[in-house]
Length: 356
Image 1 (cartoon, rainbow, N blue to C red):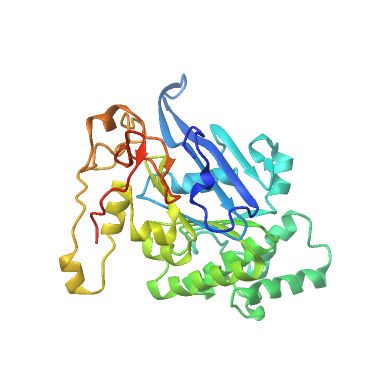
Image 2 (spheres, rainbow, N blue to C red):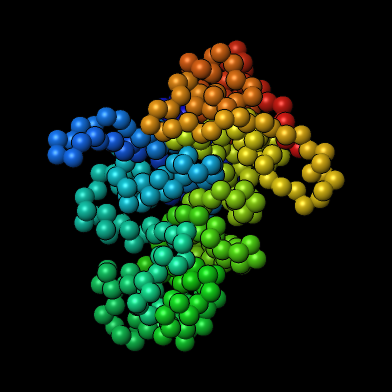
């Protein structure tokens, strides 16, 4: 796979690559125009939030999407669900290109794809009881016609996320943050979706509660065969839940690999820097670790750098990096990386790992 489709996005998939692909994203772009003026508005710039990314997601798989704030992770998740309109590219979900769907067809398709939001406080209506929050998708899609079946469905949804059925009569303010996020998960499950986008779904929770909610996600995936796009900046959480991980930087995917391969041997300098920033509990090991020094700030998506977008901060940047956009290509090990250091004279080679 490349951002321009020159190789297969499946190169880094785990064993069983012949399994159904539930989602195929190709050359996805999400640009936001910037206007000047109040009455006679004139477009003066464009924010390149997501700028030509491609990836596949298998049924029952979790793809972690990581990177610094502002790299386009959440925008990608929203675009996949058509909650943001893509500027270009295709999103094929269960064999259908949903970028071509009108409002009515997209509304019906959303029964199969849902989102769990970051803020368990802001994402729940404080004036609604839990039964109405969890059951709202059923009401919107006209599936609440049988009152008894409706109540039983709410009770079942609360039970499978670890809440008591009688909690349906309470309001959100009566719950802890972890319990509120479980309510959000129950709401996402109401219509039996196949795909759930988790947008920083545990980042607002205490560390001890994060582990519990992540375990809920994993248990539900095993029981219901769900596929996840797990957007996060906490690499420890992503490592625990993901099968594969895609690393984004300034609107581009710079590396995709299986979870174990990425953490054992990160190839892209940006991935190395991210992993080197993870603290280690053992003080002696932490003191011996080599550091990947990344200088400067993330460039603006209004005016992204030419060539490799990471070259302005990369400690291994070459002249070629300043002018030539690296393609996301596969190496003999099956992973994908967009870095000129990884392709020398057309032959893939490993980049020395700087971080311990």
